[in-house]
Image (cartoon, rainbow, N blue to C red):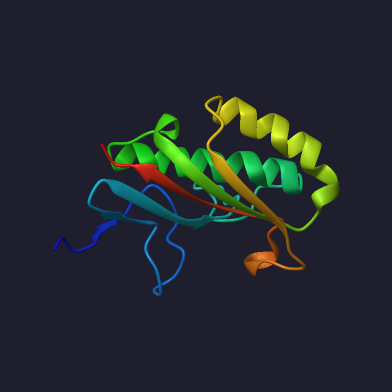
Amino acid sequence: MKHPETIHVPALPPGNHTYHQATRLGDLLFVSGQLGIDPATGELVPGGQVAEYRQALDNIKTILEAAGSSLAQVAKTTVYMTNVDELAELNALYAEYFPHAPAKTGVEVRRLSSRAHIEIEVIASAV
């Protein structure tokens, strides 16, 4: 049986000591929930939910590429958002990053850590 392999991207700020940015198990990559954190500042990007969404997707792209994968290999996403009223804008942005339309779950939540407006996790092929 294979054991999970930790994926860590030094260019991105770490979440905290309780989890890794991503884990590879066999042919799959599991990317932990990413916030819209600017890697240069370690802070949420300004501009609200849509701006954070774009940054979170950019961070996911960086993690996937560091693990030898890509956005094109994403099979499933889960999006947590604090304002479902912006869903049209989020879906348009999502289509730019994922033209292959992977499976997706979107959930409106009351609050996220760090006062974020968006958090995204993905499952992708590692091959």
